[in-house]
Image 1 (tube, rainbow over the protein chains, first blue to last red):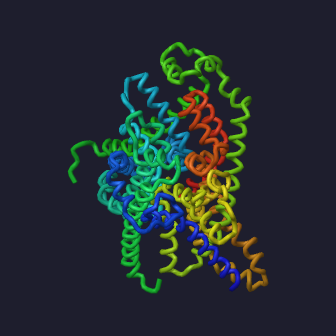
Image 2: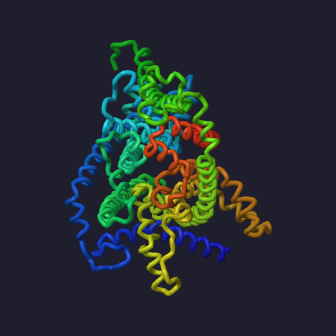
Image 3: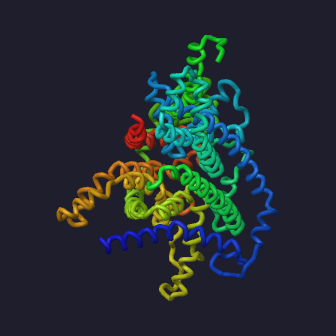
Length: 274
Length: 301
């Protein structure tokens, strides 16, 4: 058993090295003065200054942030309703289709989702003259659609693991479903909704393929700009941008993870000896 | 609580609102679009009539081909490019899924064996890549694999090679990219099942004289099967239609079907044909997606 666990942990170490080495290398090279990746031309922050002067990238980042804020918020509302609809509303006709429509976007290849949404927007334009020019509006609708499924899954797993006793007691005491959801269920699923919002926000910020399909000629999100630059090869400004983005995300995830861990510990405290 | 409106009616309204809002959204923005893709892939023979005439004007040169119903599909069969693309995508997605399993299983197993304060840290390290940009992580491999990239540089300074190897823009790079970006999707469901495994069973089996290999084959593997299936589906399905990885890391000849569809749409601007490519891709995926849905449904029933 000893030998096999040594092997197991070496594979684990290899796995983490594999996951993190490229990112670390990218971050180190973002401070490289030379344009070529291999040559170390000394420490420099020139690519960061170049990034700050690049209005194309900054505009795209602003657009991406706006879309991500709106779509994550809408996706959280819709996804939470979907989770309640799947987990607290009993049986109804079409529930199976509903479950399917929640699970499918999680694995659907992006090219298919992107193409189908674009064809919808074009058909709608023909039929009712909406949505007019494609751009931030159509990208936002597309992002809401695929990310609400993620929110629904996160909130649903929280609902499934929750004790129904509190809600049932409230119902027994004459609480109406709406009030019970608002006063009892909502506070309990709030952390899951927050996690869902964050995931929807990052998914939206990161999406390239679906945005490319649903964007009109005018709108370029940050991933679209990044993609058009790196398609031609390694770009030092993008190294700097990547370092900033990954840095922000890492700090955020570590803080979130740490807070959750503390909460778990506080919750676990009464049952000592666990 | 004082009631103004009939409470029964208000409850029904609330229930209707909760179910109908997301339901209608998905119906309208997820399901109906597929129907439109299907319709356009058959390229309605009544091209000149609204509302589809404008469609085909948009697609430019495709007008002569869209006059007959099954022509797009016939073209998919006749032109070798598409068949090769589909087969190659299936091959790449299958092998990459297997590689993810080979790397992900020992990692998930090791995490499940680790005692608690450390286990959370290890899990956090698996989840972290989920939150960082997918596009930028694929791009990171361009920095590693390029002719002037780190790996070539290292190999040359060690004297192992004289001139840089062509690693970027090859199929090998595509495999690497897929395994790299999708392995967390394999580890998490595997961990979720392995975590619940009763390690007493292993000890019991060992006490009864089973060798470690037997324990693994007869106990661990069957019990971990749901996690293995879930992980494999979570990797295989999106990998099959992958666009970004072959576009950035693959060579010009690395025609995975996602890339073929994208190019058909954006470069050739042949919308009906791109739709037909999408429909066939979806048909290939119907079975795995249904299997995935059943796995998703099971926990709450």
